[in-house]
Length: 284
Image (cartoon, rainbow, N blue to C red; front, side, top):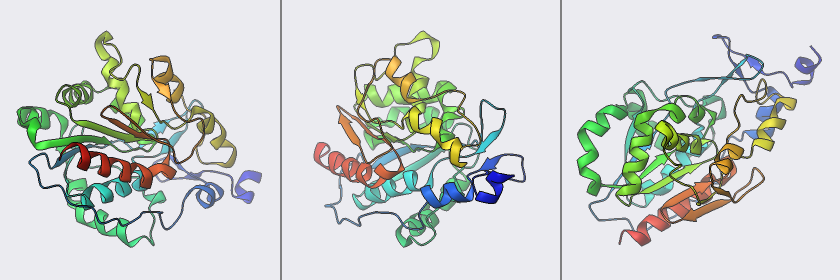
């Protein structure tokens, strides 16, 4: 009751899940982003497509049995996509089974005109995405048309994607065909799919920026998460052989070979710039 009075209690949603408290939203969500509307020399080649793998799941179970109302974070999704769009790339939107994309709309920056514009432009694709199985069946032989695979962040990337065989197949396809792989925050949870069937972690030995477990463990105190995570991400990725480049929720971004990662929603703009500039440089 005291937490509710002070604004620290997570908000109970109609489906029984919990979204962040008033205090958490005040601390962690802004109605505008730091997006820089850069004019790039647009890419003109044939590798103009980027496959974006989204979650189609909303509720992430906590250790205490409560569910966090999540999905992909809209800033972590749309700000990098704005940069890539400005650099001349198009998007193929996909979810595991073709169900609609789930976004954390409680984190949507309502006063950011650039984010709103690209969201409205891509909305039909979010509502009717391609399934990963269909992508594999239809486009695996067309790797020359693709520049990268992008997995946006948000805790929703921890639901289903780490256990999805098709996610692992696509990440290995990207790696084997010299496509770039881009992700941030909790998005690298999808990378765990490369260890399925006792395979070695695809990114063993890579430098990487990932959302720190230490921050996730603190957020229940002010009602961002309704409890502690069942499984952390950063320590798991570290245990598989990756080298973590950040210890805080900050603007850290990292390029290692053809892997581009960022540490948190605060890194969304920097990740977008790094991805756009790197792809334009390497694909000339």
